[in-house]
Amino acid sequence: MSAAGRRSIVVTGVSRGLGRALVEGFIDHGHVVAGCARSAEAIDELRSRYGRPHQFLKVDVTDESAVRRWAEVVCGKLGPPDLLINNAAVINRNAPLWEVSAEEFSRVVDVNLKGVANVIRHFVPAMIERGRGVIVNVSSGWGRSTAPEVAPYCATKWAIEGLTQALAQELPPGMAAVPVNPGIIDTEMLRSCFGPSAASYPTPQRWARKAVPFLLSLSSRDNGHPLTVPG
Image 1: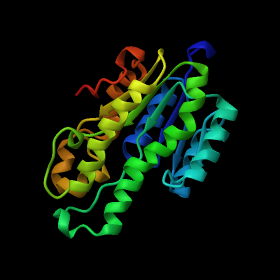
Image 2: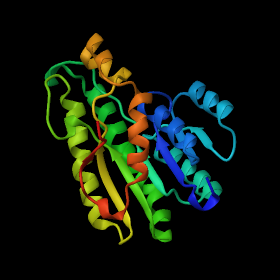
Image 3: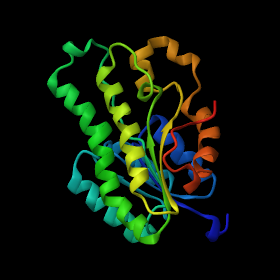
Image 4: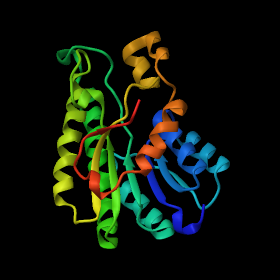
């Protein structure tokens, strides 16, 4: 791919699952990826496998100062991202809401909602200054419907839908914020809810074959529209 056609893409939560599959897919398509995760081991492995110009750093998205430093590094080396994907998320253990501890509830909110806001706060101003770019906040089918025993997770994904659509109204012309439901994929998160039956759904790598071109196709015309990765 020519330098003119190459995009700078930022992805959070790249250690496994959808985030890792997206990293592999975007790089295979010739784009430059900056990713973060909490696992130092996963970051070291990604650095070993993918050298420069790709950038991988150990960052906890709930730590605003760490996110700020990460954004400074990425934007300094790669410029503002063309595509920013807030993918990092956790889910509560299956339990009725009244059995979910305050600590666990807070952790889900801190990662899934506050972490997204932290990343937006420190990457989007540079994108606005440049005048272009797409922000994808990964939502869920449980951000548009509900299920028992995952109330905290549902709450955060419903919040992501609203946050993203409000953000879309704040962006200047030429940019987009899009809440994207990835669909049902066989990840560790799904297995924590579905158990062995999760294996009947596509793997992250299989999912990424459609997700990567779909995400790359998003533009300002999609601003504020809740979308779903084609099945």
